[in-house]
Image (spheres, one colour):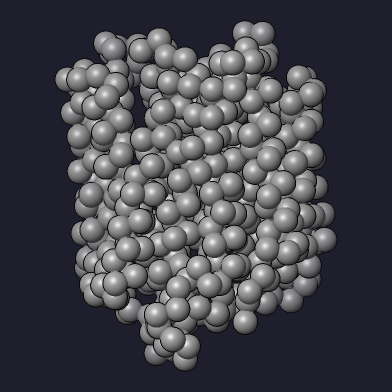
Length: 460
């Protein structure tokens, strides 16, 4: 059996995991306006949802990091497969606690605790899955494979707002009292995660071989500047992406003068996350070793198919017609152009895409019209390859220090806990939601630096 066939089952299994946690994560963007309405919260208070969820990544990955420092790296001790199973089981339990809290109407604090536990479970998945995918083949195509898995993660984040917004706001909320409208969705998620745990347990997943470093094992990971600069990159990327997603519904409803409802805004939000899906599919092809003519054909085909999925879901659930969303196609075309300028180089693509996002944020902040709205929504297209490119650039040439570096990078998902409440606080203080987008703008400026220079500092 050749290497490609032995890697197929693990790759499929991990891809399903990426889809599930993408779906779950994007539901937080629906929970923010939902809880804001139910509990009469301010922008800052509502964004505490993201703090509770993403602070768990910091706490969980810090534990992994400290254990790795003393030579008891959980992944090395129990393996990637059992780490993934543990994360899925914890996440399943968290979803069921969340559903129980909703059914019994136990209050906002209990929801936050359940979200924290859910974040701990997903931390296990993140710490194990990202380097696992990177090691399933050559280092030259690691970004391509990670982009492919991240594309299915984005499929989950695309369907999450559309389906979650439809069922929570339009189906269950009508017949529910208080916060109980989220009971059934989270019961379903808990059951699906439990089934996925069983599936992974019964799958034949071969543990990747971890190459040993010739250098002193006691050398700190902080002796590699490109690694901790990459960790800062993860902090700013996740913080920016989550902050924009968290505040997008409020941005659309408040700047439209009431013309866009929360239900419709949640469907527009799926274009933001759907853009990331399209970009990651294109990135998986662009950063691969496929010949140029086939690359272009595959990229066009996947872009059309992905747009068709997003459009169909939102048309049938929210009646968003083509006349309302056609402008998104302009930004997809621009995404093609900037992939070409990136020349299939991860660092160069990262710098270009971060620079484009700086421009899109500025347009969205200053043009409160249809074009400005689609500029803001299209940021997802250019967020697409950032995670995988930062991650693979930061763990390059680390050998047996890869797991330790991975846990530090996952720790910096902390950005998703810090930047959204900070942006919410600015929105409350200024009284204008669009001004608060200065927060992700600063984050993208840093990513321009990492793509140009930071990724190479201290790399041997």
